[in-house]
Image (cartoon, rainbow, N blue to C red; front, side, top):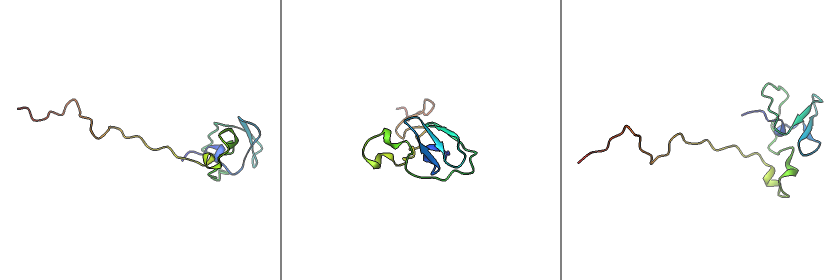
Amino acid sequence: MKHYCRYCINCIAQDEDEGVCQETNKMVKKTSIRDACKLFDFCEIDAFYFNRSDNPEDAKYKPRVPKKKQCDGQMSLFDRGEVS
């Protein structure tokens, strides 16, 4: 999992696009990714959740579903079925 600063327990949002890391006192953008941050502690609630809606369930982390490389019903160009 990537370490998005917005899902770190140390991130405090200041406005819609910027926040502050409580531990390092650095400015954090909404799209910041710091994979090398040793202070990252996962929190399932987005620090910038007030941009979404009034429902707190919308602020929870939702991992992306991995895409299939090829759908099940698709044929390859090189597969030949039985020719009558």
